[in-house]
Image (cartoon, rainbow, N blue to C red; front, top):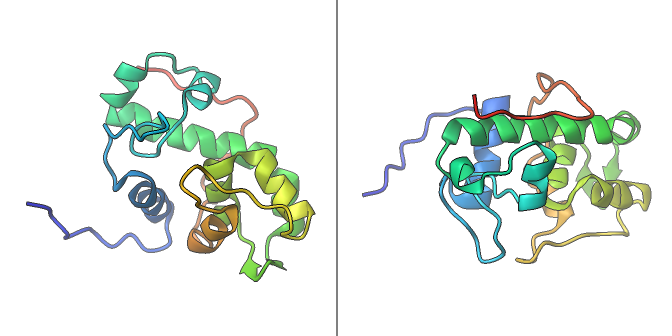
Length: 161
């Protein structure tokens, strides 16, 4: 039986990460998709390696590690996109109001460089993942959350401890 009684988290950081998790994996920590992306937030192996995580079995079996990895990736993307956040936040591009949380969610989907391409081309340069999900749709869906508590960091690492 599925429990549909989710707590209301609004537009907080908790709400942001839960909304991303529901979209990515229905909130399932042990899910591996057909493309090999894994966990609650659907990380690729190369992204995990970049965060210092090499043991994917341990990653899949550790909700705590997955939550740390999500926050670390947001910190890295916030660092890589800090100039774009400052320049584009509050503007409308491709019919979407650009917000920090929308930018971070889109970077989670397609990487920081794809987000830079989208923003700097005024929305003409898009990106879609293997399932056809677009950066633009992530920017719209995940816009307006409070991600101010994420501290930008150029090289965040996550440990199993």
